[in-house]
Image (cartoon, rainbow, N blue to C red; front, side, top):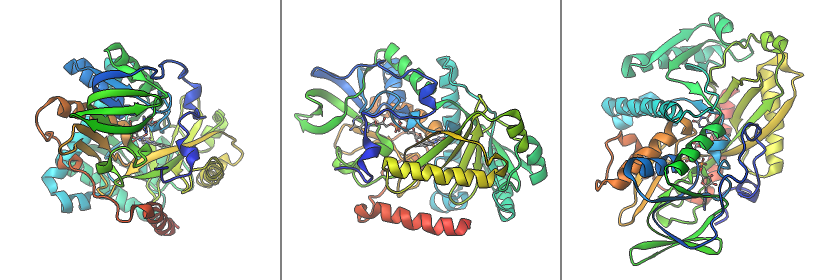
Length: 444
Ligand SMILES: Cc1cc2nc3c(=O)[nH]c(=O)nc-3n(C[C@H](O)[C@H](O)[C@H](O)COP(=O)(O)OP(=O)(O)OC[C@H]3O[C@@H](n4cnc5c(N)ncnc54)[C@H](O)[C@@H]3O)c2cc1C
């Protein structure tokens, strides 16, 4: 299976020209698999999910673990994201959650997602990972006066139902502590929330995993899996790994090619980022951009942005529907226009970097962590673009599941069970197109 998008987006051998790549060394830290090996647990995918899972398995449970990654360690979305640690990993309103799962289960879900946020932060401090951690809350901004009421309501629900610390700011208050601009009509903050350099965090985790005994192979793409006598033979280039258990940690880059039971359950969605040249003090003050906290503009089709430590401005949005290098460039030009419409004082600011990657959306609209029936295959995916918070925590929960004899984890039902397959899965991009057209109309 070729994947839903243009082959350009699946070029595992091609480095990503992201800004993060200029801040850390990703070259030749890990080898390619060049021999046949055996292991107890094989993790496919070297992002937050796979590495956190392997680290827990090795360090906490003393298990024998191998990670294989198709690109280099630092290729996938874990190395390309905006670094926002926000909540919750769901594409669903709280009222829908209450209706679908009930109030108590929703409360458990929010407890788990806060655990996720703390888990990421604890990993950073436990392993002393220097990943430019910044900020002490997340902001959600109303892009239009009509949105301010819903923002206030959301802040209220967070506080009353889930005990989350929130604060509401009028437009003029946020002008003082956040920023000005054409799409700022008040905001609210919630805690926990912070931002990181995602690549430095990933490399820090990988280093710890290696230290604790995990064998990590990069540029080692799995092309086939066969089951024989209760064991799995995993084919990678000209070599074979034999393993008792497999962890699927490929998230949005899964191409419906390895696990028939997991096929057609993910809609990979492109997300794009642009980064400006460092802003001068005058430029920053022109929008009074005085915060380093991550910010979400609460449109239907979200914008997310933040000021980096070297005063570059990061601006992200949903991507295109093609996935080629050309479409990525076109999309980045459109995003530059969108950014400058929201922040007109930055009309002359130049863009230094643009790139994109895949996030995983599912029919369940929440993550899935579990084990396939009648197989020793474990999975964790579908973070709905909320992996900084969710993927490291999910990876460690998955490790618990792998070593326990139990079928289920003691976590919220929101995370449990596979999402339904997409009906007529070849139409996934068409569904997405319809969704985007509808919401872009609503935003207008
Ligand atoms: C542009 C962008 C911005 C984002 N911003 C944020 C944000 O600010 N905050 C947030 O919480 N989330 C954000 N996300 C989402 C977040 O990055 C993901 O949810 C998270 O990284 C998922 O981690 P993962 O380890 O499951 O997957 P990944 O990090 O994508 O890792 C999966 C790995 O599997 C590998 N793989 C695939 N197929 C094979 C194969 N056959 N053999 C071997 N390896 C294979 C891939 O190469 C890849 O490296 C963003 C995503 C993108 C793309």
